[in-house]
Length: 78
Image 1 (spheres, rainbow, N blue to C red):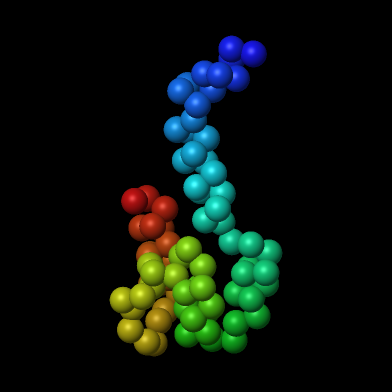
Image 2: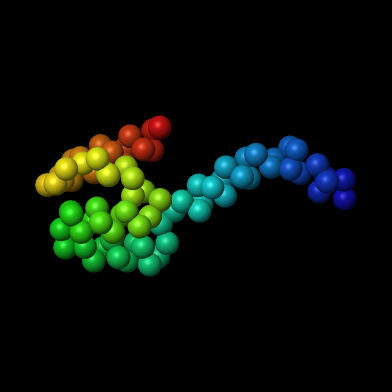
């Protein structure tokens, strides 16, 4: 019983961080929409509806796959 009382003080921060990461993952519907994109501009537009929408916001068309890979890697590292 006392273990439950002190859970947040010991593990609450880590649980909160993990829940935040989980909330940022793509849903099945979002992933399905991304797989149906016909161009990279469509991909960028669909991505704006997710938590990842802002990392390509400053890229001007035409966007390349290498740019997407670089920005995605940068987002994961930061």
